[in-house]
Length: 366
Image 1: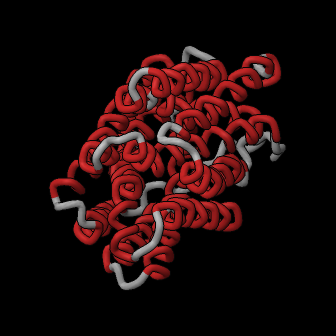
Image 2: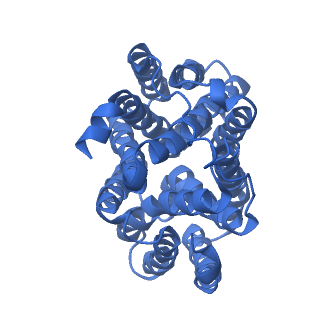
């Protein structure tokens, strides 16, 4: 294992630094939505368009990776994220801010499709564990960013400006790390879309996008003040990070879809706890299963769909469809429902998804 780490140190460093910055940028949307709502005189539901714009950009970035992925390096993705975060920080107008979220998202999607397949392949049998570790570092930035946002007076200018500066700093040191790696000749299985696992990923990533992007707004509707909601989002990501760190120890021993199913079932139970006991406590607890959605989905889908260079962007794109649509659908529904409407929807969706996943165990074996 140590030899593998030494051999891939450049790729690992660039990946960790980039994912920390990605976590910081994405987690800012949730606590910043009320501020954007006030600054641009739009409703909270309209401000939620920023979250969907981010995921639309992700989808476009992943689409570019599908066409030209072999030529993309971390620096391309980091440049996009730096420009996008700077546009948001400028607050030059509502539509320019939405455009900034899309540009940041495009770089985010490109980075996801650059690093995940290459880390998974570079570390061989330990690939699933290292993939979990890489994605766990996302939580470091996601924990810190909402706390920094509150410390800076809940001002999107400073928080997104710092995100842009961090992207530039990582760009300076990223170098050529992250070049495409292919499986040995004759071992590449053909590209074969698996619609079942992509459907599961679509719903799971929609849930993750809504928890991160709309969770603070849901907490505010439940009677929690803005600063506390931002801190609870940081606590959510602490639990999210701990779950992914723990996954490093077991990911190569447990079937990926079993982990995915368990995460969905636990989310359903915790959502019911948020409804009947405490939205604050159980929202934070949901960070644990939410941290397992993407690794379980991605590893299962990779095993089902082969090593063709088009596979990683296709897997990620299927999840991004949910990431785009989820907040767009849920934000208006929250406006029409009671203070715990977000958690009722979360419970209903995850209960239905749990049943589907339990019934699909045999078909999802890799």
